[in-house]
Amino acid sequence: MSLFVTDWSVFRNFNPVTDTRLGCTCPRCRGIRPMVSRPFVVCVQKGRTAHGIPAIILSGSRCEIQNPLVGGSENSDHLYRADGTLLTCGWDIEFLYTKCDKAFTGLLKQARDNFARFRLLKVLLETTTNNTPIVSFLRAYMNAGLNRFGINYKRNFVHIGLSERNPAEVCWFY
Ligand SMILES: [Zn+2]
Image 1 (cartoon, rainbow, N blue to C red):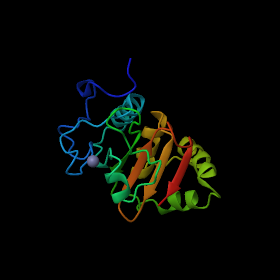
Image 2: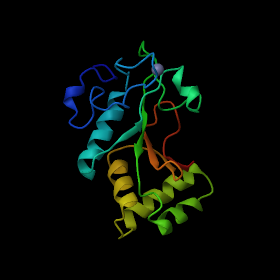
Image 3: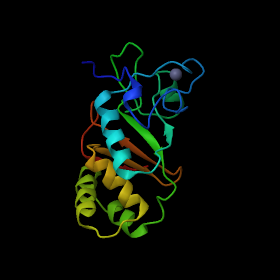
Image 4: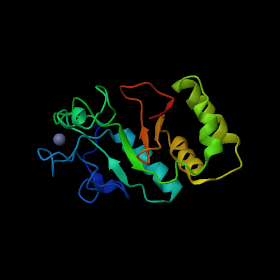
């Protein structure tokens, strides 16, 4: 069994044909099927199903030319190679409510590093009784197995990723 997605029809809510930003959006790659980690998409679909709210991909896969152009890190979860030697294992999902739960995100901001922040996030998600949009979003996708979360206030998205080449159990703010 291959580790990258060969048949997108098995995923109910994600498809590079209909999700225009799932694949690399650079002029070179447009229309080319991206090489995306299957375990990653399995988790995302599981989270999406549990959450029950559309997940709009703002930034999906990026080829090696596009990634640095959009400011992606060298080891970015978004990065893939057409030959399948590197697979996308993270996407940015549009999130318009990052600011609406200041108490929650304020607590998270106090963590001393990205690992401590993930542990704190996990505890908060397990114990908080509030169910604001950011809490229900993060809870659904964390329970689905995603283990890398980046919250971007300025551009209103949450990065969700699976640790395949980058550290597991991290949460950061941009
Ligand atoms: Zn490209």
